[in-house]
Image (cartoon, rainbow, N blue to C red; front, top):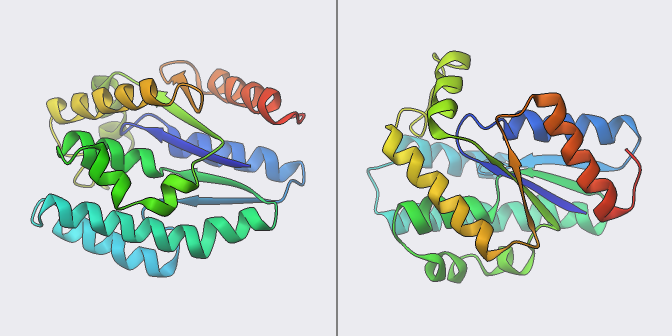
Length: 206
């Protein structure tokens, strides 16, 4: 079982992926929680390069670095866990590149898919997209982590609105895989909605 979480900044995807991990762990399911970029020690080095030189390198170079991160992450972390029949929960995956580099950076879907062949062959069973008005997302991150904001957090509203547009385009492409969740709902209600969806899809009791 491969589950991914996607969303704009401040949507709560990291909090919700951790909550689902804790829920499944408490029920003794074999499980792995990971993230992109930076899902292993090697990948952390790539993440640091991306954060340090973001907006200084060519957009294609940026996309290739994310693709390299994802390939290593898949080969060394995700696929071995799935081979051991573990449940894998990933905070961001291929959809993030399709949105941030493909849509926002203007590189296009075809380019992103071409440089991510392994990821295209190993899509999640279900992706939870936490949909949120970018204004609310920005308010949340400025309140919750004002001292730890990264490049993405510091971008203007127009940038974040374009990210949301990109995600909504991806949702149309993958309606069977991507489950849209209203991220303005109370956290407990969102968690319950996610658990209900997983119960129905995988025939397990949470």
